[in-house]
Image (spheres, rainbow, N blue to C red):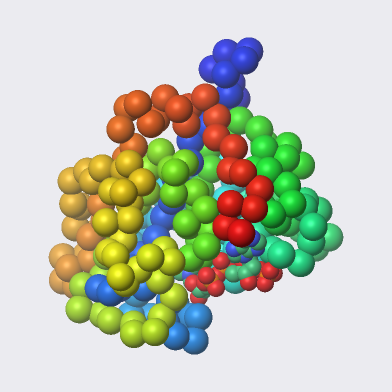
Length: 209
Ligand SMILES: NC(=O)c1ccc[n+]([C@@H]2O[C@H](COP(=O)([O-])OP(=O)(O)OC[C@H]3O[C@@H](n4cnc5c(N)ncnc54)[C@H](OP(=O)(O)O)[C@@H]3O)[C@@H](O)[C@H]2O)c1
């Protein structure tokens, strides 16, 4: 899908649910049931039902009916650049140290698209300067000491401080589960940043070292 012959449409959205202390998973690297709420799952699923492809690390993926049909980029350091996933014709492995985001999207056949970023920590961080919107769900009163943080800077900085530092601004807080106080805030880039993203983003190889 293109808005014109030369300007690709691209929209990059992040989705995460975090504990009070900003963790996406516990110290064992698993997302505990304490972070799983039906209303948040529905919010997440509605969002990614609308994306053209998802991007995630080797240990993170959505588990939905139909996930097998969704196009996906799976980050791994096990390959030098970009490689087809032999077990899934809709997936491509990508190592950002050896290939650009554009090259990975081209391998998947999706240069112009709406893209959902699903984590984990390093993958969320890689796109911090590129998000058009980041949907941050929060579960209060749950702490996961030593867990996997949303971004590498957490918990020294809060997730909100990191998002703000990268040019995103919070929208209204929507309560998803009143009984448990679970709520989501969608952080959006200012109009100036959005225009930059609208014209396409290229995550440079090796940005994470
Ligand atoms: N609460 C939430 O919203 C949320 C969101 C996402 C994930 N999670 C949970 O968090 C846990 C996993 O977190 P995680 O951070 O370990 O997972 P992850 O990012 O899914 O997987 C880490 C692996 O992905 C690859 N990878 C990540 N960044 C890379 C990069 N820059 N370049 C190349 N490869 C890269 C590496 O694979 P190789 O080892 O193959 O090199 C790395 O070992 C799971 O329990 C998951 O369910 C929760």
